[in-house]
Image 1 (tube, one colour):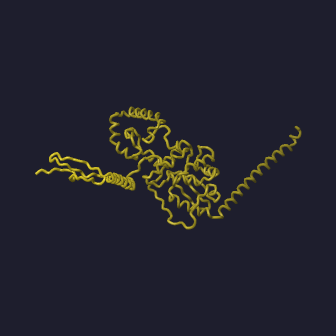
Image 2 (cartoon, rainbow, N blue to C red):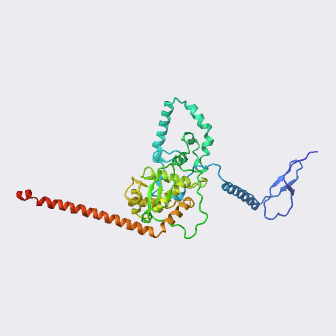
Length: 375
């Protein structure tokens, strides 16, 4: 007995089956005609859209999962849309990865890559084929260092890319402790701490001191004179802007679980600068080392850089609380002003005494008999 596999069919009928088109078939063995049950366009749309919906749900589920590792990705739009800062997010000579690889301004850098690679191979007697195989062996791991939309058609170029964790290594070189946790105060009574400028803090009796350490740690020591220690920053166009902006952008990546130490430190410095006079206070204290321009230009620079930064609100919560407690002591500004006035008073006395002595010497000189005989 032979069983013939066919589609789901029904004998042909004279009447139309609704408005659906039916596909006619003819059984070659029996000569009888059959009609297949047509699949409506409406049903096809449901199947297609349902498939797309499942794919979207799967993508949402994957996006909600914690990343296995941080990947290098493009600078968020809200940061590079500032045209004044856009140039600091781009390499100046050589593009280290696939993000800026197609830039016409990096053609010279691409040639230099090959020249330097050739010199390196010649100096260490490396065989090109062996080096190529080593890179191809780890190509999969290199690709995992970048998000998918960054790679695009540049998988081939990854064979020549230098270590892809340059931003991560640079951030590590600043000494920031990824595992350091700040135990935020669970509850603070009274008004929340406000941000005071460096000039206001100086009037309240707080002195600024540089902290020469391997981290971005900020400390505050309470006493008659409060001591606020901050890591010094070299402000220039070639190092400060590219480095700090790149690190802040790296911290802003959604799959990078971190405490935003660099972003928070830049933002904290900006909170101390309300006026060019505040820059002068920090500069004289050795916190800001100026190779950029005038105090007005530095004040505008920090205002521009920190405009779109979102810091970690818990990182300096205890520090702000301690500063606020010190700042609210009403008698401290008065004593400070009294001491300052006294210092100015003694300075005026010293200047007046010097002028008096100088005039006395001049008067004595012209009163000498020898001087009179010459005249």
